[in-house]
Image (cartoon, rainbow, N blue to C red; front, side):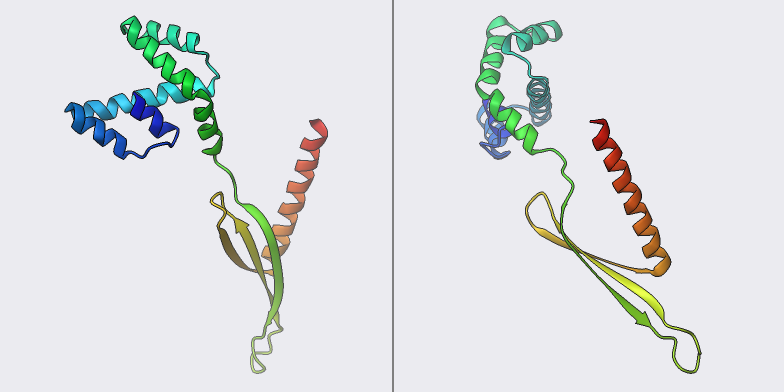
Length: 168
């Protein structure tokens, strides 16, 4: 149980589970199921801000564990609940942050013999910061019609965001 909590709070790596397996001679499938069940139990309890007594009553309702085992489980949870919440809040999904946008228009000529007019081609460069603080560069090439469609959709998004802001 201690190794599972240490892994969930990122104090130890998955290697701690292998050490438990070799030390106690546990079956690999059984140990994986146990770690999975404990992980779910601790994360759900931390996510719902459960107190140790609420966790205790829930475990006693679900599983027929001896009282001393339930107390060990709840004690381990109460010691690490704040760290579990930090891990849960940091592990969420976050969209990349838009740092910069650059654009340019290029005119593509069909040539003198074809007699076609120049066709504008737009290039958009986006500088994005990922959750890991690394930058990603995204380049988009489009025609005038595509650019007008993008601008219209962005304007619709801004209007919708303003409406949501007014409601809140």
